Image (cartoon, rainbow, N blue to C red; front, side, top):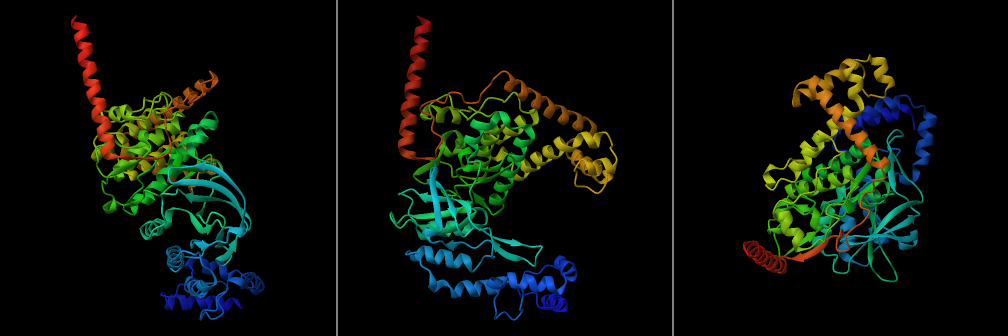
Length: 491
């Protein structure tokens, strides 16, 4: 395959933009530098992924040809469930190479171990011999598989039936649910979803074990990735509906992603039904009053997660998660202020927990604030001192020169007030918070040393009717006790 041929393909792409051959303008310069031997090598390496009948004769398979190849293989596999077959096929025909789900033979999975249990099912880790699909964009969009790698297997609870509605929701959530494929245990005949594995586990467990090893920048990094994930969900007009630290999974000490999309659905499809579902400390007060799940409700839940992240304490871990707690939350109970969190951070949390859902910030506003703090925490010392561009570059800041960096920080400061006073205030807030955190560690403080035996942090289902009956009984008893106490005082 000659270099000139590759360039001609680019011209063909420009004349026929409807042809989906995955070439981008930026790649043409790269291809010009390739010698024919390198191109021939790539073509040989990619032969198994090529589509011989493609009019473009590309050294890799384009999306259109990929869909034709996948369609031709539909008859070579079957899950045993027509709904699952249709789900996989429809999703494959609308996805790119690295994104489409597969039907995965169970014998390609080994070393299966149970690692946790959530509200919607049991989670296992496993070694997948096929490996995850990917694309090396620097090498002509080369398709590849990682080879044997660890993945997560999620088995749904018995009451969670795989229905057309359920699979339609999974398909709609496909852009952010990290689903690789579906398999079936041949012994139990239970279907399992193959998903991204979080090496560090869930955020709640991670904080209990590693909180004292996390710096404030680490916590801000985790907060930033959580908010970025939620922003994708809200940008689609969806509600997650079950956010808590057990559903936040960590890749490393600064990167996390959201899991458990069982309650995730479009806003207009979220209705107040006979039951509510979730972890009591993370549910917004209006949910207990039978209001529908909303993006503002997600923001309340996010606020609890961000509080746990910076404090290292699980919300309301010192008491029973019962009707009494629900009534207190509806009456305005919120987690205590974290004394080694920056005041600006605490102020944001209080806004997330506002009793009025309309007064809570949007996910865009929260993410902008956290990104600003991350930027400021890492770079404001350099910018304030007007360090030259060379020093700026050595410090790892991704700007071409110091003037551009200064312009960026001043643009940000203009949104919040006087640049000098904000620089000083933010810098000192984060520095003081970091120092306070070190002091707590030095005196041997350990988060959540004791957790109440009736504190429940897995998602549960509650009947609104029975819940209201329990609340009425509780309020009646409390009123009776108050009258009794008043009469005792009079005597």
